[in-house]
Length: 461
Image (cartoon, rainbow, N blue to C red; front, side, top):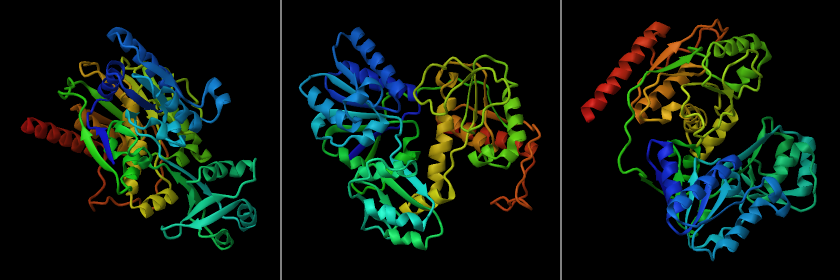
């Protein structure tokens, strides 16, 4: 199965290419977006483009929101839409990432021209449970475990009954109902002697689309570094082919970009953010964000704690891929962490995936996507931009992405706000064996590295 993915650096260019194609070229398409709000935005954009071009595509949204909930599950309504629209010469069915993984059948879209997936979807649904021998009997009453080719892994088979499980088992029940769920137990008796947590999961298989659409296309920044790419690469029948939607690579005008951060050594983590013992430090972080007085300040956090300071600007949820609403704003802050837990690292390692890939996809690329909602999207803008994040590792990752993808050289500034960031006794020695640098030494080294990248780009040109 061949999968096309965009290798262009600019997300706005990918979106324009997709919308122009869907509005101008008669054909039958499925467009997959990350959330319901974006589905409504894309529908209007396609209709507006079609009106200018004089085309008349049939465009509809199939999702689990609104009145449609009364018409059956989205997994059933998506193939129904395919059957209903297959006779139309020009049609665009818009679904969400969730709908993509829940659709039960794709035969109704046989010979449709293309399915275009905007942004990298979440393909893995995984839950962890504490091992409790007292629950083995109840689980075995409603679910069988069948062996698989994977050592220590079983397929979960629902026996029927159990129409309304307790809250603790509701997500597990939903996974089991798909008929595709697995767990890392060989039998329910394993719970009698297992000390650590066990997990159940469902991994959506992209091969379900094989032979259905003329083309399967993914449009996402750094898609080949995403968790979705790594998971799909596990299928031997998948072949990835990069392509460009832009004939000429866009060039960003040099501009001042500053990335500020407050932790030199301790990495951001949701557990540290939420620990009550760190409440005073988190209050200092909110006070630090409140120092930003510009009204064009976009900010977000997944700390799970409400800000204790009055922060100017607009707070949004962390994942804002595809939004153009703030492309004239020049300030953004993100107090964010999305690294895999120790058990997740073990899980991905067992699959043959480097956990570092998952960390980059979840945290690093999420942060780059968020900061690229600002005026950094505009190649012609020369306005100074100020970004804020928690730790130096995040700041360096963002700076490297801006340099490699957009040719923008960011200055890194450490703001010492008096955080009590204790590390274990003695600290962790640097992996290169050298003495840990001071903040000033790091700033000098970072400037030298940026100059080296600039020189290399000039030499390559």
